[in-house]
Length: 398
Ligand SMILES: *[C@@H]1O[C@H](CO)[C@@H](O)[C@H](O)[C@H]1NC(C)=O
Ligand SMILES: [Zn+2]
Image (tube, rainbow, N blue to C red):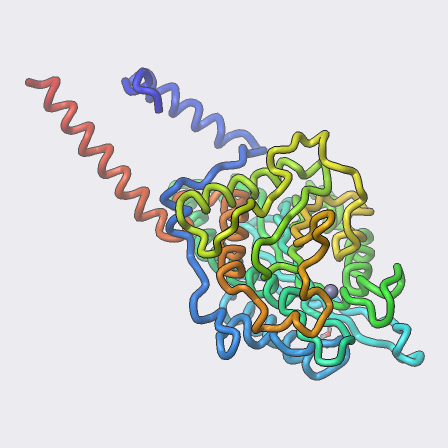
């Protein structure tokens, strides 16, 4: 705050501005403070690849229609039911034949979980939507898919808990101040663990994205209650953030869509801030978000990469595709090989991704002051300001 504002009148203007901002329905994207970035909850032993509670149960073959798949599905659902009791959970089922199913139907189960502000009507909430696929590829036999996408699922699981705790604090704080979160805040958060992303034979429009195609089609047709702000569940998605092929060292993330380049830049800015604050464990000579300094008009309209976002993108959903890919470099070397296993994960990078995704979601949900230990930091700042004000007052009295 410039010193010139540090008088009663300045404070008054700032308070008026604050009230105005609160009254405006669309909010500015609010940056997290350095204190909050330093206090973000980190994964610990729960990411242990051998017996960690979050990641290790996903590190097994999970081909749709097999017991490994059911076990991972159960793990995801159990986690949400026990750790995130305030989240709604839906399973969206479909069946499809595949090129190798000999005319048999294979079941696909998408896991949908969301949390809205208390008292909010379903159709009036827009949701930041974090997405990863939890199925694994049929071939090569025994393929684990650690970056594809066991690790992204675990990153999201960890982020959703940190966000959940902060939302509790934020919405309780609003209520304590006589505000109604259902009215003041029309934003919630949603997670999609999608099924059947991988092709069974060779990638075609029909042999891939089984879960995503089914869900996008269903949600396009399912209407929210009449008079809702958002007509369909698809239009309730404020941003579809898809994580895929993450967990190898020194990733390169491109910006694929002009319309969401600003969100890409926000994540790129967070990457740089976390790194300069010493909050990244992995070292990298190059930034991960390689297009951050580009103008949105410079974002190449290459059509993007085939992945779970495509059926949503085709129906007008805003997409941020976070996938390790760059021209000349391609996908990570372990991609679709037996080397994409637990041992080849770069755990520092996995952890850094978790912190970055949490930070991005926290900014989107405006959780400054509520995420991590930040409320303690805020209390400390307030106390310092008060002490300073007392000092200044004494000086003028003398
Ligand atoms: C969807 O499939 C799951 C797992 O197979 C099952 O438990 C659930 O009851 C099904 N849901 C519906 C609505 O059919
Ligand atoms: Zn894959």
